[in-house]
Image 1 (cartoon, rainbow, N blue to C red):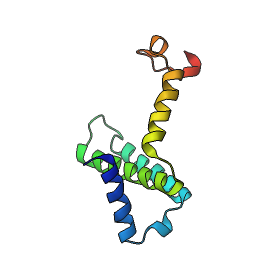
Image 2 (cartoon, rainbow, N blue to C red):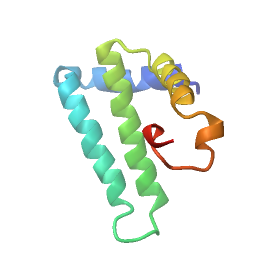
Image 3 (cartoon, one colour):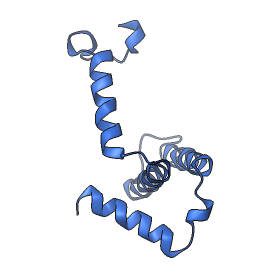
Length: 106
């Protein structure tokens, strides 16, 4: 299944339940943050983690991101690729290779 099909399935699932009425950009941003915290919880107190639980939380985050992009009229594929171009400029390989420093510190 390609990403376009995945997006359609996520949107269809929401439409079938009439949940779009609750999906304002603000509510979706809150949901993304909440699900990200739930993903982080999978790693709390230990380096061991439950891969299935982490996978489910990651899927929740991606689903909400898809819905938010759709709601805001953002082509998520283009947005990701545009950000990669910007990050390549901010983090050139010759300065950032093997470094975790922020671009302002390179």
